[in-house]
Length: 231
Image 1 (cartoon, rainbow, N blue to C red):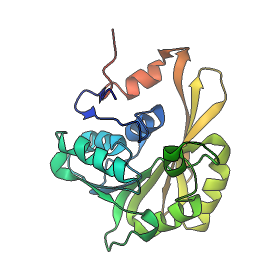
Image 2: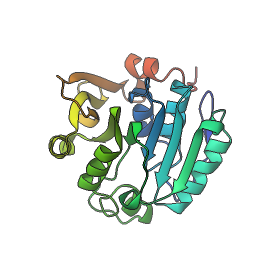
Image 3: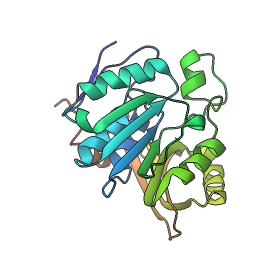
Image 4: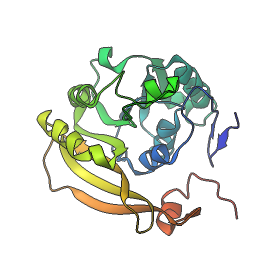
């Protein structure tokens, strides 16, 4: 499968692992990683999000975990071939049984969410079969440092439930990004950002395309340090 080339790194892809997608790119570009010294990514896939965050934060160390062994092997290749390889580590691990004494300043995830699918890779990467929202949120709350931020990208329709579960686990919404696929269309995704302290959440709208197959100025500006756009 053809690799996906960014300005500072390349993503090798596989038919058995979810390919580079807009959800991951937006999470990698928008997650709050500025003050993080150590970052945990839950469900690395190809390693895209961690690589983008490593480009944005040149000091932080990264640990990625995934329950899909093929994804772990692919991520290791992509990490090793990147200019950030000394700060990136990835392991084959079920998050539900992940044990560490370390606290993380930034935890990111593009979590499973589709209820049904005929695809094997969908069953692992996009369903709540292996990891549901309660498990993801409760464990992340335990692993987050006092200054830490927990960032996810999820479908709009599950947002209220996700926020409710987070609050039950002492994770409070700090930022909400409403993502529409095209101008004047319905919100399709949310990027939600939580911390251990309460505040009035910041909220803004984000549009990916201004017309079919034409990226919005907002998207072009956000991703200009990553994407190689054709003239």
